[in-house]
Length: 339
Ligand code: DAH
Image (cartoon, rainbow, N blue to C red; front, side, top):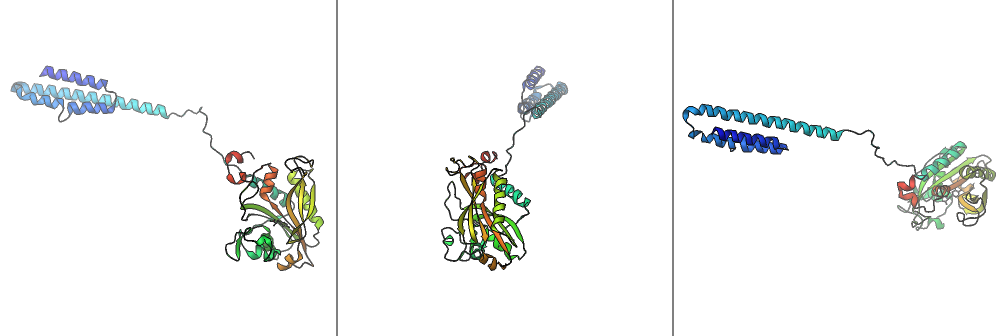
């Protein structure tokens, strides 16, 4: 019995020192110390031991048990410690490693161009105002001298909400709101989103942006309009930019003009950028029609004014030489971060 015990003890201790995981240690505990374990089995053999030897054998068994338990505890402690150390090693931060690069957002070319326009006009004493995108027919058309049978009112150009309410097709509607306030003189620019039922292509979108300008005061003439817009063009496209006023027609201005700037790419020689003409169209403008002033309660005998409307995307496309408007709406960061 004693030899058996010694032999078993040696076996168990060998297993303990060979164990490489907590699971294996637990396995040893169950198979040798558990209720159905080897040591318990051994104790069952006590009935064959002479009664006077039993206390001695019992003591031996208990000693073996304690010895095994102590060995198990120690092995478990060692194993837990090395696991902890391994984890600590893994968690060490190497401050010399390169940092992870985060993708940073970027300002949109439209925003950059708009801020440039603000800078120029605010510098000339203009105020920045805004107006509603959902508009009454009156503000978008009627009060701007665009009568009911005007082609611009054709359903294919305008998104109607109902017979009287629509998505504004031009920021010129903001002129009317501003004039109705009755505070004169007016010197405003008004940026905003406009909507037209157009198919998407390289130069069209059903939603784009305009910047409206309006000046109303006593003794405003076409010369003021020319001087202001020529200065605007030079600030925007460079000192050497020339401007050309071409007669045009808008219902809300009389006379009206479209403004071309000399091509800043070729200096007016003619290139692919200006389609060989040397000139690039940038905006529409004119002297506010007396009827428009009247409808908004301003006396055309006392006051005159000029107005202009610029496409914001058009300015961004020209200034940054982008050849497809769709790029401005996709918001691909690889595109945006070039500006
Ligand atoms: N509203 C015009 C358009 O969308 C642009 C325009 C032309 C605005 C002449 C004006 C102006 O204020 O005077 O095509």
